[in-house]
Image (tube, rainbow, N blue to C red; front, side):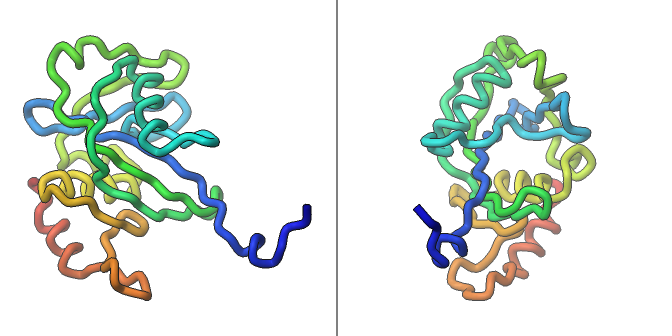
Length: 179
């Protein structure tokens, strides 16, 4: 079957999903992949026929060896990449990990070198910039109890036809660096 002009114009984004987990101090769990220079959040690409939530649960189980409850959606981020094309990324709330859950983490030896909790203030140094923005927005969404739509890790007005970022949200995110 030949592809129509309309089908050729349709986006075919890569989709990924991850989870934010916290400790008692409010620090975020990050993982150090063996195949990347920077830290990440637990998660990965959605496989064919899999929902983002199911993919998130699978990736957490594969990377950390634990099966905690994965909660509500915190952010969805449209973040195309020149090398990889369009991407849609979901971040879910993994919640507070109890000490026994943290102690039972078993890293995927071929994929994950370390899993550690880090304060929000360290995210810019540990994560690539677009992921740092996404994670900080997810932390804010969790506190506000309201999911956020992002583009390149930045909030946008949902009703804004041109995709301009919300200036007030940017200022709030920058000013709340200690949160």
